[in-house]
Length: 525
Ligand code: BGC
Image (tube, rainbow, N blue to C red):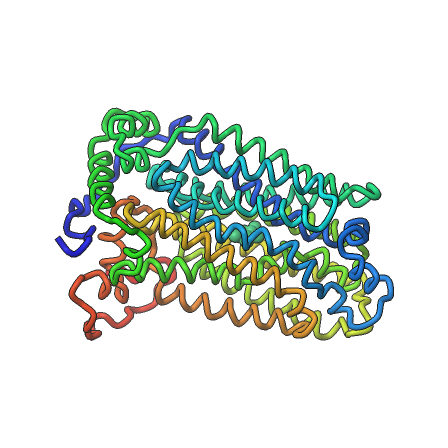
């Protein structure tokens, strides 16, 4: 067996489809788990609206309000305030630290227990935020919510990928993203309503996060754990019973054996994080890090966090900007359903590549409108141009929603073998939250200094990531989760050289140069 190895010891790739029905238990478990996405989404969506409310600024960020009232200096710089950005980014910073602990609990205590911990963090965090009397309480509340996000985002995508039958894994996993988008939309709607309630509308916005928090926590109390996690923790019989229930058949032996084998290998691994760095795991690690980094470098959260702020920069009134954020939020939800329907049919690569083109064009268009219509001192876009901007933003959001949004979470959660799955997922969440917090922290300053060029920057990033997908991302559609290494990574024209254990001095042979580019297929021979 290769050192620490999963490859030789795994059963040869069966290539067979395991028997599985789409049972009510799978559907309800997945729907329940995915409600954690509601909470994440609500937290993403609520901050932009709240930070643009005058009552909130008066209470916690009076200098921002003064600057806005005085209407001095560049339009692009009105909201360039580190404290304001810290309010948004603190949640993600806390999330990224907590996910390292969450990796341990997901492996040792299970996916369900990790979700329960997340629920507890959410509820206490909401109480702090809703009752905040000063900036300190506000930030503590955000940090607790961030810990909730760290634990939830660690456990939920894994839970969904493990529990779903292979052929609809992508679709079921998209439930997480659908809930994120519904959470964002709900927050946008709440902000739109509470903006009229003075002076405590912002408090209501922050407190209503309690609804998704309670929903998720109750769900986590009654949920099952995944067979993979039960078996990994030595509860084989229980794992088999759950497997039979979720697959709706007694004929689960082949899948059960595959999980048992994966779990046996997992037990040989003492330190999963160190194991991630081994040569054969590097491609998986790299893809995970890049996918999550790229997801954020599309610039999506410049829109999700700061759409209201961005739109007021462009000359919209507060109400109009909140209203437009609701429209983009709705487009976000609807478009995610496209992904749910198509991801297991056309595959992951096709969606990412298609969206790349659409997002690139939208970003360039936003940059051009900003460059030509908004100057430092005049912020009147005019009615027609304002509508145009909202349409372009919707186009951008919609293409993100059926591609990088769900797939940034799906692919890392389905790609690692069991022994490194929790650690890999932890890296995935960490990278996502790291780049989310960096963007949350620097976007308003970048807007102030780069002005419209900030969208040129994002468009260049989208071009680079699309090329990366074209050449280096393998297709994972319809491959059983415990067969990914054998059937995907070991067959890929580039990454397969990492999969043999000898090879540090591996020389690229002619047959390993990229084959003709195909949009829908991976470079799998
Ligand atoms: C991303 C978030 C983003 C959201 C938008 C998620 O997949 O991780 O950062 O705000 O999609 O819908």
